[in-house]
Each structure stands twice: as C-alpha cells, then as structure tokens.
Image (cartoon, rainbow, N blue to C red; front, side):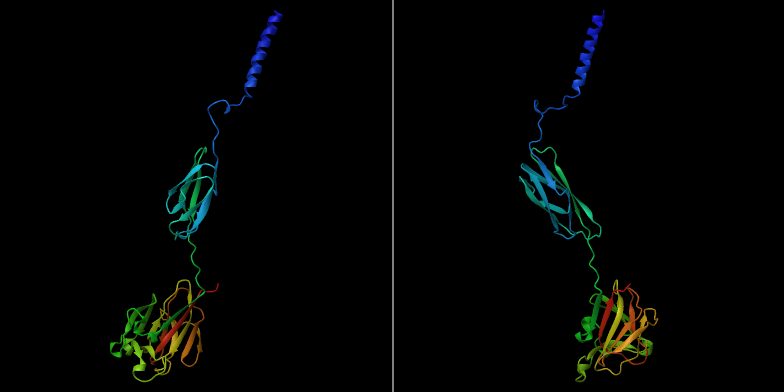
Amino acid sequence: MISKFFRRAERGLTVLLAAVLLLFVPACDYGDDDRKSPSATLSVSPESITLGAAAGASADLTVTTSAAWSATPTGEGFTVTPGSGTGNATLLVSATAANNDSEARQLGQITISATGAETPCTVIVRQEGATPEPLPITEVITVDFAQGPDITTPALPSASADALSGRHEYTIDGRTFAIYANADNNGKFYWNNQAQYYDAPEPNKALYFSKEDAYVEFPAVDGKVLSAIEYIHSTGAGEVPDFDITTTAGASMDYSLDYGDGSSMTFTLLAPTLNTRYRLTIRNKENAQPAKFVLTYMVPQL
C-alpha cells in the first residue's frame, strides 16, 4: 500500500516538472519553421522635416538600406526627389509654394518602403510660417513739384484758369494726399511754372495754393509717425506765409521750426501720434508755393 502511494507521488512529480519545463521553451523559433526575420533593414533620418516659408525652400532626407526602396508623398505643397532607388540615398524635399501666413502648417507626409523590410518609415512634412519684414526705422517721402503736374493721380490743374477750390485728394507713389483751398477766401490751387514768365532760378515750379485756411494734408504711414516736414519754397514766389501744423480736426500741434538756406523750413513735430494724418495749414492771407515737400516718418521710440 505504501509502495502504491510512492508510485503515485512519483508520477505527480514527473507531470509537475514537465509543466514547469514548458515555461522555459521559446514561444517562436524561426530556425526550424517557415517564418523568417526581415531580409533587409530600413532607416530614415530625420523623422520629420520643417521647410522654410518661401517657395523652393528645401531639406534633405537620408535613406539607409541595402534594398530597393520607394518614397510616396501624401498631401500637397511639397515634392520629394528621387521617388525611388536602391541602396543608401539622399532625397530632396522641396516646398512648391510660399506660406504667407504667420502660422506654420503641416503639408503631409512621406512614406518610404524597402523591399524585404518589415515596416515602412513615415516622415512628417511641415512648413514654417512667414516672418514679416521688420519696418525700417525711418522712411522719407519726397514730393517734387519740379517733375510736373503729373506727379499726382489725377494730375494737378496746370493753369490758373483751371484752378480748383475745395478739398481734393491725390495719389502720389501709392499714398493719398489732400489739397484744400477755401473758396470763401477766394482760395484756389494749381501747378505753377514760374519759368514760363521769367528766367527764375530753380526751383521755379511749384504747387500754388492760397490763402488763409488752405492746407496740404499728408498721408499716414502704418507703424510710424510723421516726425518732420521740410518745406522748400519756389524761387518765383513772394514771402513765405505763416504756417501751422494741425490735425485733420483742425487742432494745432506743437512743433519746432528750423530755417534752412532761406528757401526751406523744417517743422519737427514734438508729440506726433502713430498712424495719423497731419496738415500744413496757412494762417495768413499770403499764398504758398512749395516746390518740394520732404516728409520724414519714424517708428516711435518706446
């Protein structure tokens, strides 16, 4: 009876040991069956690409493999060349259009597969946002009436008989100016050529505008203030009239005044406001004949 007990215990121990040994047998053994490890390796660097904002911006993509490979782009706004090959290669990824938005954007992805490689590689393609050009600190706008009445659009009236009164807007180099003459004061304006009357030295061609309350209104420039107005007087005119610098609402501005060589005067605004139009206004009954305006705009100092 005791021997039967030991024989049963021995059989139980044998089964238990067999079960434990099974835990240490590998789950997969590619050496003795039909399943094989990949016959080729594939690696791609970098894992993502960010192109510059400009059209034509490019970056390199490195493919490392001994096998034949292909690159398949999905998305839009970029190309990849070459699209296929064998062995190690450097691919060129290029933006086909500029990104004019300030925000970066994702264009798509490139899937690279190699013959015999277990899995393809995927590379994300992005494009930077555009960086706005910094505004120049100083911008100078010159209005030279010596060039003729056609410097403005529409052209200025070129004879006293065609003179205008009231407020009229003119475009010069893409910026809007305004000229006003008060009809109640017999005011008028036109382009005047003094050289046709007598041998006046340069500058002898000017804008004639008169009289009290008349003005020339200057454009505003984004991101800048009008800091100085240089007024160059025509040689064919009389005395320089009394001027004021005002806002479009007629409020006087504080300024300093410097006289040049006798034919010019420079008004420096002391507290100009950003993106604001200002006027050069006649305060007395004399007419004004500017041959040239030189306007200086500056980025305000914080």
